[in-house]
Length: 220
Image 1 (cartoon, one colour):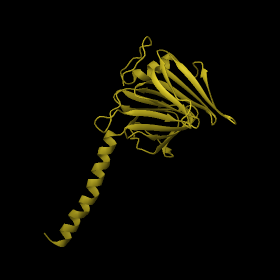
Image 2 (tube, helix red, strand yellow):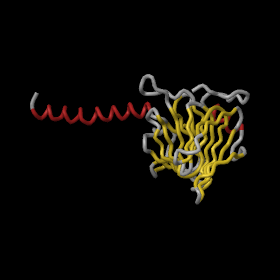
Image 3 (cartoon, helix red, strand yellow):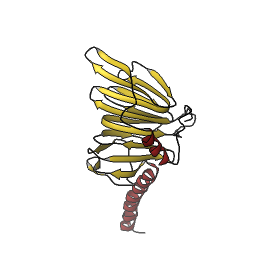
Image 4 (cartoon, helix red, strand yellow):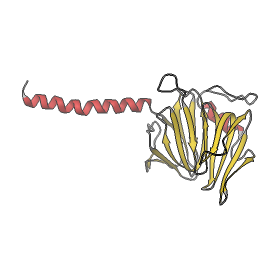
């Protein structure tokens, strides 16, 4: 084998191996399950089946909807007028929701390290909501106000400064509002708003599940 042939083989290996690794990453990454309206990922039109990598930014127009499948039992819905930065590839899956609404149905979050449990958090300009398996709804009402509803299950919430920590437990919708004021963050109880039982059941149905409104779902 001459030098030219060796250089060709080396070049092909350098190109094919990274590409294969990228394809493997795409196969395991969360995917866009469905789209409605104008949805953009990293400022380019999104498409069904597209892999969602850490740091991806999803932006939706007013009437748009983007559903992302995390695994066979977990799904999120990003609704209209939303801007979200997604980091879903590690044990602690986070979404930085700058504006808009995210509806979540989360089950069976596997950890990449033995002995750990997967976790999922949504962070907004005013609050943080996290779970290990449940259905919940988060809406950034304004840069200073965040509405969080524990629709079914257990959700831990806190303000952006890690104060006002509270664990919500609900069979059927327990909501809170986090409001930033000149004197600090004010937390108050809120009514069920912006979403319906049918909407939550519809999201669960997308992954073959059903919400039982008679019990608090505590199973991750």
